[in-house]
Amino acid sequence: MKRVVLLASACALLQASCKQKKEEVKEETSIYAVTNPLTIDTSFTKEYVSQIRSVRNIEIRAQEKGYLQNIYVDEGQSVKAGQLLFRIMPKVYEAELLKAEAEAKASEIEFENTKTLADKNIVSKNELAMAKAKLDQAKAEASLAKLHLSFTEIKAPFDGTIDRIPLKLGSLVDEGELLTSLSDNSQVFTYFNVSEPEYLNYQSSANKGKRQTVSLVLANNEMLKAKGEVETVESEFNNETGNIAFRARFPNPGQLLKNGETGKVQMVVPIKNALVIPQKATYELQDKLFVFIVDKNNVVKPREITISSELPDIYIVSNGLTAGDKILLEGVQKVKEDDKISCQFQDPKAVLGQLKLKAE
Image 1 (cartoon, helix red, strand yellow):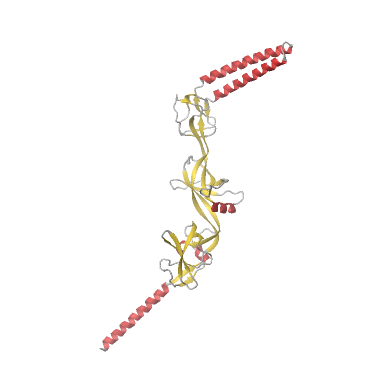
Image 2 (cartoon, one colour):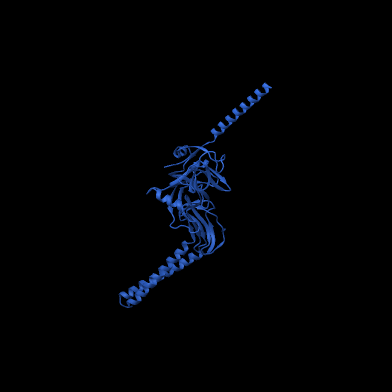
């Protein structure tokens, strides 16, 4: 009987000891790290969908009507400024030029004869003036005929690459009809839209006389080796989207980029007085983002927040928090609403100093 009592007592003591150790472990694991949001000036790299355009891209159109007699280039060929591209059959315009030059010559002879008679006072000065006007008109018509003849030869206005040629040899070409397009791809423009807050931050932080350097991610997700520069900002915001268009220029030495391509411009966007928190201090519920606020009694309460930007390890909060709020840093998946916890405060600068944050 005594053995049974002793055994029971030993078991009770063992259970009490185990329970005490579990409570001690539980008490140790229930100490959670808390911190404050931090207000800093920072910046982050943002991607903008962009359209790529050649620095010069024009349509080559016929200025005269006629049959397409010669095509001197091929699609995709590189050409030099002044190089002959097409010829429209010039016979009619050559004949018109010969006729105009003959009329000009006849008017010149008539003017010389009238001048001789006017010098002898045989004809009036008015007749001489009429002969001079007739000569000037004939010369102008000859110059016009020469200009029309020159329009039958279509030359490249600048160095570039020939696009598609829709017409074939012998086609009847109307005045103004498209012959091809010419692109100068030695450099390219990229156009991308920036929101109003980002535009204001960009303007307030931009160094006078120094352009913003940007990068370009291509459609295959590879980065263009050459860097570009933001050159201009449009004068108006789009009322529907609230964005404004930026234009950046990129060098294109290998002619890799073509007019009409797409890509993503990466630009460093500065943010003044940004309220930042570690991403690990948040949790998502029904597509909304929350943090746990720890009140003065160490009771946790959930609070929905809105973020304006995201860096690798932190969120920039636009709504829902203030710099004086105390937030749960670790254990957000372990606690529940209205839980009272033991916590240890960590300095927010020390916390953020361990994260991937570009601060100024």
